[in-house]
Amino acid sequence: MQSLLTNELSIWNNLKCQIWSDFHFSLEQGISTIVSQFKKDKQTEVLFLLWDIFQTVNWEDSSKQINNLIIETAELFEQIIFTPWNHDLRWRDNPWISFDLPENVCYPKTALDINIPRIHGNNILVANLFYDMKLIDPSKLWMSEQDLLDFYATTKDGEYLLWWDTEVFKQMASKCRKELNSEIDILAVHSLPHPSLTTFKEDSIEWNKRSLTMGSDILTWKQDELKNGLVVLHWHNHRKSDNRLMINDKQVHILSWEQDNFWGELI
Image: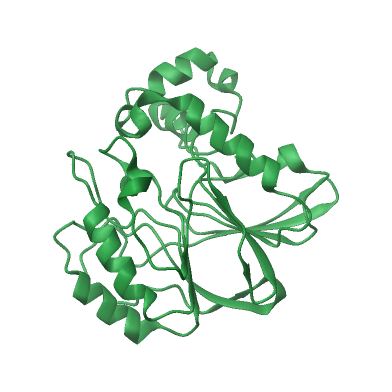
């Protein structure tokens, strides 16, 4: 069986943690099997779940499986940071009320909730970050913002996540920007936080349009207030990246990981 958790990672201020995201397991995947592998993989006391743990495409509600898995996992770790995202929130009107998690699990309790726990000397901003349509100017693809919104409404996230209310997405990004300041050591989100992280494929207008909807640009909006050395943990684009950007005069370290058995069953 392959390891589920990213290898032990030391980030800002020597915080040792492990990270897990975007496996998109079937809802039939056994919880006990996953937890058993967690026990074997565990190397630290802090776990980031930057999720999309189960694959939900045909009206599946994954909240029961998520609750059961995190409740069992929380017994293994001192602190868990959980950022639910599109596959974790689909197919129900108010998805956040469906989570009932232990006290050592830090996660947004509502769409606009922000948490800033201090863990091992680090201030960690935990936030929802979806698609605020500002990652890249849509005119670069010869589109208006309305064209982009119309395109977005045809996607599964646009149709089934928060019921077409893209204004909520913009409010999430605004709230995250407001709380992101020079006191924040680590930003933990699911979606892309900067335009440089988008991936385009040649001769694929459909994918290029989709890339424009894959995140929110919150970093360049806060360039004068970022902490020098800010670490951003994200996922969602299903690609490994390790980027060190200079935003104004501040260095920002942006990290994501590629899971070995992504889209796979546990074996």
